[in-house]
Length: 279
Image (spheres, rainbow, N blue to C red):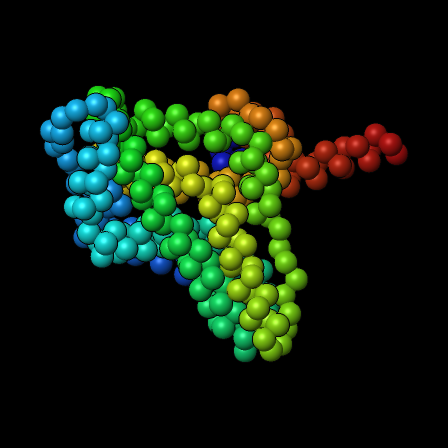
């Protein structure tokens, strides 16, 4: 048992030592440190709404107040840091694909084109996601229910749908990249835009959770980031409905069913014993 854990730890350490994992891990940790140091969050400050009238009228007034108090510069900075911290590790497979499928002198340019279109799509989607998080906070405050209940319910539902698995399977697709000229830049730009759309389709509920729940923003971001990385590294699965926590239970069951790793000495002794019996 200890030998199995030791081999798994060595495999993980060997994987993280291969480029571009060290660089990406450093960038992600720097973004996490910046968010913790600056104290930025993607949600507005807590509101004390005393609007009178019907519930719909109160919701509309509270939403207007939340949007009015939101600082665009603060939200933009928080979103950029959040994107770098959470999505850097998810982009390791595309980075490796671009790195090994591009000419040596064009590698930096190819990755820059990919990041330009990838971040551009995410920044276009950011206002909608932030607006959804503010709306959840306002509605749950008026209904006097915790915001995490609604956000977790949405997350659990989306994790079980076949559409989630469909987007996740498409994330494993790697395109053909041209080697020269405008065609190479175009393919990298298209690859970044497509991967951003697939990441949005896969991770929007995971990104919405830390935005909607203001009290535990950073821990929920870290948890969502771990889930996104683990899901991306797993192989494709059938597109169908999955019960809550079925995937993680299945991953754990597959891990338990793996045969124990046998040492080289025991394996050689078994082969020698088998050959002796045949002789």
